[in-house]
Image 1 (cartoon, rainbow, N blue to C red):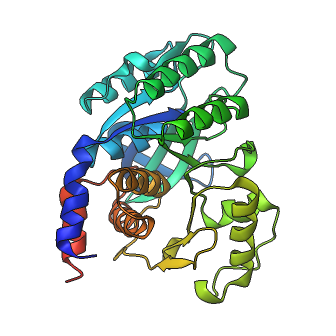
Image 2: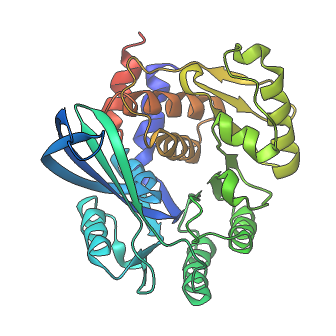
Length: 336
């Protein structure tokens, strides 16, 4: 992509309004040093130096959108607890209004706590409640989103499903149908363990293992060149046939990503990562950047190229991180 075209797209980011709906998480990182083994069990002893918190899950998609320069409307559920309060503070730090978040006193705020020593993750501890969400909370959320759609106050909607109970099939189908009438982009990052049969999405973005799991296909390995991977092509064709998205983006780790469309040739975008330290949150960055670029009028190949550069930036950092407009532009400049 020429620099002038990239600049045109990136400059339009500031005008885009995206609603992100899904499972919110608080990502906690405990940083330290491990220099000895515990006498109590064969595990390292970590001497803690620092603790940090950031928005995870759907919250990570939201902050990626903000750091890329667009506006976001946040929809999700937090608990009436200290972790929920911490999440509100983090939202405000990114200038994301937490007023649209729902608070459920019967559920804990989902928290994923990671212990890291010398850039190596040793352990993750999850705190979460994944039972059925109160229907009243979901209906209120649905009502607010529908009003935004009806008033043409959105350019795109991203659904982030981690199987924690916020999203369900009826909710997604209703929002997708309403959005389609207004030509609003809808994107879904699906999870095989919580499949919801929906049709009419603009964008569907699984990674390779998720795509195979969704179709019930056993993967024989991904060492084959993408162009020659007939198994991957068959899985993509099945997803396009059954889910009917306009664009199917499949992340392929070190092989980059592939864009599939009905009646069009597959497009492979090689990875832009120079070094890979941590893949946490890379999928969040991809769906945020791809949807955002598409919302500006970029074609799907341009949007995929932008998303691929964005992902290459975040995997070169440790932890759940975001990408900025400046970093994105610099990444493209390195190709010249």
